[in-house]
Image: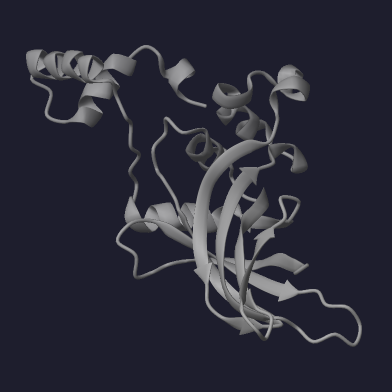
Amino acid sequence: MIDLNFQVEGAEPDRAAAAPLMLFKLRIAERVASGALPTQIQTVVLRCQILMEPSRRTYTNSERMRLLDLFGTPERWGKTVRPMLWTHTSAVVPPFIGSTEIDLPIPCSFDFSLAATKYFDALEGGEIPLCFLFSGTIFHDNGERLQIAQVPWDKEAYFRLPAENWKALMERYYPNTAWLNLRKDVFDRLLAYKTHLGLPSWEHTLDQLLAGQKELATP
């Protein structure tokens, strides 16, 4: 049975991508018995589920305030702070013997209706604890014919992504900007309000709506 181990060794933005994309540096190595030869791996069709593990770091008071929408008040965090799904991704690993390194691409959304975006944006610094869960299919050559094996479901890797990496990536694509995804009927009401008052921009419209609510609107 082929035993592949996975290790995330770093992360950096894909500077040539049209949309925010983080490349995680993934090292894949086969564990072989003493004296045995490594397998000729033809390819690996790799799938990966990535979880955020917010309980594995500490938070400042201001971060706790910004996370109220996700986790509630701090006294409830013992029940509400649980691993959360960030995303799924996949990659096709080219042929190798022994070990190889690939870029695992992770699209990064700036949609604030998503829990991951709310969580990442709330952090002032530090690191984001991530758990990578792997599965997939291994195609290998035993010297006579092509064979197929599965990546066991217990294969995983941990990585602490600097929060600044995500923030710098978002600032690169959306400088001083945030996106809201509104239901169409809510947007129509907001547009009618803006038009009725003759307000010049959406920022002015929201400022008008938030007038008198500054204490609630400011974390």
